[in-house]
Amino acid sequence: MDHPRFGRYPAARHVIAHLSDTHFLAGGAPLGGRADTVAHLDRAARQLGRLAGELDAILVTGDVTDLGEPDAYHRIRDVLEPLAEATGARLVWVMGNHDERAPFSEILLREPHTGDVPVNRVVDLDGLRIIALDTSVPGYHHGVLESETLDWLADRLREPAPFGTVLAMHHAPIATPLALMDVLELRGQDALADVVRGTDVRLILGGHLHYPTQGTFAGIPVSVAGALAYTMDLSAPPLELVGIDGGHSFSLVHLFDDGAVTSVVPVGSYAEITSFGEQFVRELEALDDEGRLERFSRKRGSASNG
Image (tube, rainbow, N blue to C red; front, side):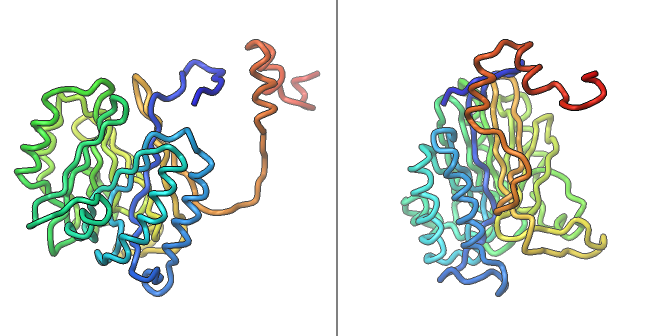
């Protein structure tokens, strides 16, 4: 959807809502007996619903459920599929270590799944290619990109996409200050670097860590979304791993022709401190640049005004 722009940067060509680590349980049960994951996702969905027509994709980077229960997959699908339809966004699911491949594929993707082959997919968003990689290891919580997945990825990346490629994976190739999470990191990162280096991969999106963070890998920006289920408290003592029922968030990823910006969106209802509505934007639209500076930039009632 076209909106007025007043600065040097154009509107984003693609916008992705990046959610992660919803950890749904069968029957809508609270996670750990406390965290109301259903309510957290419902709040996020209401906020995303305000962006109808603005989103190209809603991407969920794994740990969709906590135990891989079919009922849990049905419940989250029943929330996010209508949201995707209402907003005009493509819904993209990625496997996580808490997910189980068979129900994940059969319920979320509506595709049969046999054996323990990774669930890897390619999604085209009007020229932007999203490659969803399955980093899960059956029976474990750490991540691995199997040789067959790396070969599959290398084959897909031989031909560049018109607007480049975004890799989506649960275990992001990024450092963490949480020592215990090192045990559960993605193994075989050097091999992944060899595959993606020099390709059209422009961004890597992940989850797993339960807090939003950014970094780089093989010269490529990496963005990890916060968790909707619960958040790791990075202010806890260094040798502790503490998850709290707060700080829930998702990310909005704006992709431009020459870059990308990731923004963290808090989930919840908060007191409004300041607000400018559409009418004010339309007023600025009718002004030239100098007029906009006078209308919106000039300080009111300060010494600089005389």
